[in-house]
Each structure stands twice: as structure tokens, then as C-alpha cells.
Image (cartoon, rainbow, N blue to C red; front, side):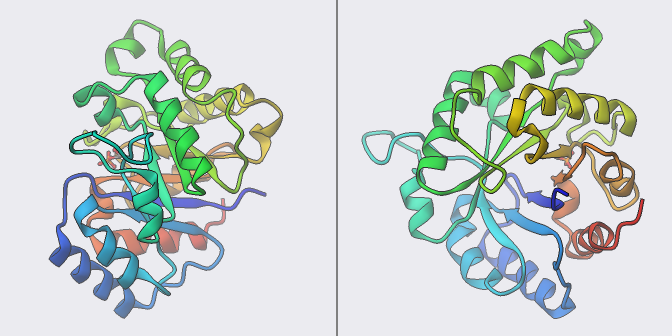
Length: 249
Ligand code: PGA
């Protein structure tokens, strides 16, 4: 049995003040996360406070990116060493917004995943096809290539790595694939991972909300959710943790 993994990707939302407010409200709600793994990934500037304030709440803290070198003349970048130093547990790598707006490639993603694992950070590697690629019937090929070039050959296990399948056209749009179509892609990804595949958690991401999370995580090969917009609301995020925790399919 794979333990469900629920992650919140705050993207470029919530500075320090709002991060602290969210954490305090979450703690007041006394939501138990027993039985599920939960993390939230706020922006870099909120990380130090997030690590401090979420401590003991059942929510781990993740970063949304890192650079593959430990230090150096790389203006604007943040290394795995610095993330580790402040107590960050998770890092999201290869999100489609990074690929689209910041030119990230599969080769770069691989270097980042490798470095993060080396520094004992837990990784969520994101894959997913664009609308155009789907329409051209290339979705499986694209995802296959992202896994092949971004991950295969690296040493990882179920403790330190999860995959997030996020069809780009479903991110922030309110559109979602049919859960059974997502399930099909998840099982293809699992197969692609080979012998380790059975234990690795594969999350679904893209317009996950309180009203649809159950439909996704009830699929056999969907082991959690990576939630963007809906993770910004403390009540909604708490509800989704509760749904995951109490799920009966
Ligand atoms: P969304 O984002 O839930 O707002 O669609 C998901 C993500 O980008 O990880």
C-alpha cells in the first residue's frame, strides 16, 4: 500500500505575513494528518518562517525549485544546500510553469533531481503534456520522454521521490482529465519506472479541488494530489487532507 501524498504548490502567492497567517489558522483547526503525508511549498522568502511555524503541525515544507550547484556565481538562484540548511524537506522540480516560462529542459530537471536527492531532499518531479501535444496524440510520448530524460538512471526510492502527473492544460484552468484517463497515464508512468514503480507515489495535479479530489485519489494508480490554487485556502486545503485521510473508495 502506498501512503497518500498531498502537496500544496503556492506558486508566487503568499509572502511571509500570509504564510504565517495560514499556518496559525491551520494549527487552530487541529487537522490531523495521520495516515497521509502532507507538504506545502511556499515561495522562497516564506520558507524560513514556514519551517518554523509548521513544525509539529503535520505539514512538511517544500521549495518550488532549486539550482543544481551547491554555490557559485549563479545570480538569482538558490541551492539545495541552502534549502537543507533551513530545514526544508521537499522540493518540486520541473513544474510546467518552470518549463514554460523559465526554459527548463529535461536535462536540467535531471541535474536538479540528482542534486536534491544527493542532499537528502525529497523530490516531486513534475511531468505532463500540453493541450497541443494531447491534441496531436503525443501525450504519452511526451510524458515518457520527460521520465526517460529527467529521471531514469538516477538512484531514488519511494521514500525520497514522487512523480506528479500534471497535464499542462488542466493547471489553473478548472479543466481536468477524466479520472480514468489520468489513471491510464499514471499506470503508464508506473510501468516506465520499472521494478521500483510499484512503490513510487504518483500524484495527480491540475485543478484538484475539494469536489474532485476523491475521484482522482480513488484510482488505483493515483497516490495523492499536487494542488495549486485550492491549496491557498486553509479551509479547502484542510478539507482535502481530511478527505484523503478518511477515504473509502
Ligand atoms: P492548480 O495547479 O491546482 O491551480 O491547477 C496545480 C499545479 O500547478 O501544481
